[in-house]
Amino acid sequence: MTDTNTLLVTSTEEGIGKTAITLALATRAHDAGYDVGYMKPKGTRLRSAVGKTRDEDPMLARELLDLETDLHEMEPIVYSPTFIQEAIRGREDPDDLRERLQESIETCSDGTDLLLVEGSSDLATGSIVDLTDIDIAELLDARVLLVTGYDTPSDTDEILSAARAIGDRLDGVLFNGITDATVDELADDVVPFLESEGVPVHGILPRDRSLAGVTVADLARNLGADILTGDANTDVHVERFSVGAMSGSSALERFRRTRDAVVVTGGDRSEVQTAALEASGIKALLLTGGFQPASAVIGQAAEKNIPVLSVQSDTRTTIDRVEEVLRTGQTRNEATVDRMRTLLDDGVDIESLLSIDI
Image (tube, rainbow, N blue to C red; front, side, top):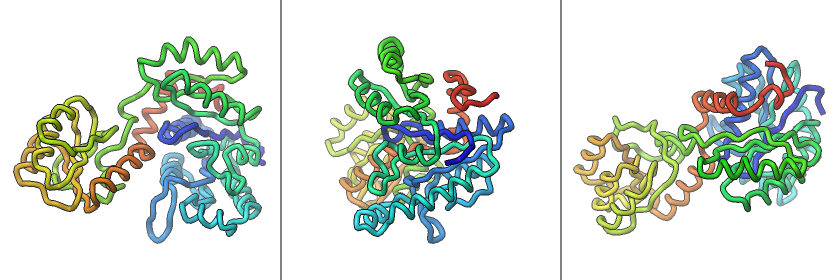
């Protein structure tokens, strides 16, 4: 437990904007003159570097908030597949982990006015060691912000269930990434219903294209892909993928119906690659199998400023990896956080949410 004003930000699903929201709130308070701490008790967005596996989000928080706290204190538990396997085998003691977490809490909150704690992508993660976000909120004596999306009325079941599971620690729900097609239904029907059930709603943030998907550069980095078109724009965002497994004419018809997509196809499928380059909604080509595409394809891609990536893995394996990156790997950087700050300023009473004066 800490005497610091503490807010834990959790969510109902991956890729819903939890990191951007957490860091936007933290930097907003930091820029207003408050001493702000940050921690992510269970690191899940992992990257290996210099022989260590760390979550990328605390690295970004450390930079944006000018923190000197060691990364291992900001992220005391590396929640990797290896950790999970060891925990299942009984080789990770929940009491020891709780003690380690308590020490990190004290370090990260020391001398701060506000501690922002980034939780997991759902309320179940950490169950095997008794350290779910609800468990951690109890340990921190923290208020909890639940970030969620909304597509159909049936989503209300999950949101209400999560809110009830959090209980009295729930500070409120924040809807993010809401489309124009669903915002009226959400505002007119769902929000009043939730509030009638005792669930506060802090606001509704619109879907913002600049916050959706990943950049082609990030996709390439996550896949370990070679970029065959050196000068093409890799800062463009892709939000979905399309598989080029059909004939060229059928492929073109399909590609023209999609937008902001990367086409995944075999490196030897020149007709599909050419069709993809003719569709305005295709932002990148990802070629599988390690095949070198025809020079005409590279030339056409360069002319249209469309990056072409190449991986050694087969198409099925590559599709699985792309799906994972798009589901969990939304680009997180200073620009993302700044954009989220703007959305929060426009749609949320930040002073009330953070219990501070700005």
